[in-house]
Length: 255
Figure 1 (cartoon, rainbow, N blue to C red):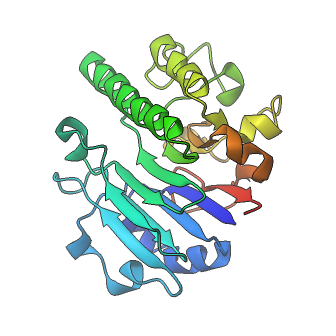
Figure 2 (figure 1 turned 120 degrees about the horizontal axis):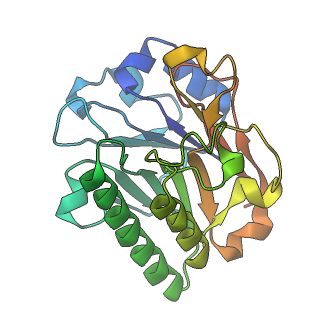
């Protein structure tokens, strides 16, 4: 089973860059999309109905902002939109799908880059999500979380850690939440397989041709709970796939 996660930075924009063909070429079973920046009624039929996939869209109330989507070959047993908290759910950040063997969270985590209040909002969002994960684990459920977490965990996960140590996305209070993910039973599947592999990024600024020079950040993740870890066969980046300032990431499971 292949799962893909991709922040497309505007699904209408990437539609003109061959999005449907890219999705077909991935041959993924499930594709979580973040930052769609569109209402469902703004989407053309070729984006809403990609051959072989059932699609779900969760838009922000604010037009042209945030939002998530899910394309899946297997129809989930249940799909839930949001975390159940109004403070977060008006931004369309979470689609939760129950596949029986696991529950998948496709999440566009908040960006704290616009000031201290936004960092605090981001950390409250992390708290709310982790509380749900712990509740599900207590019920004996396995969880996979994919998406743009908007935080690089370790110095190895971005090109210039010292220069960015006071920038949201690499603040100490944000990074400690990545430790909290692990404490809650969520393992970073890429680092599980490649603990010391450097220069592996999923986001590059559009400025200064950063992607050409591979000056990037790894802020997109697949996390999985303990019972799924033996089933992880690969977890990596599709760094050659263009169309966004993020590249897709993928997780291969033996399920």
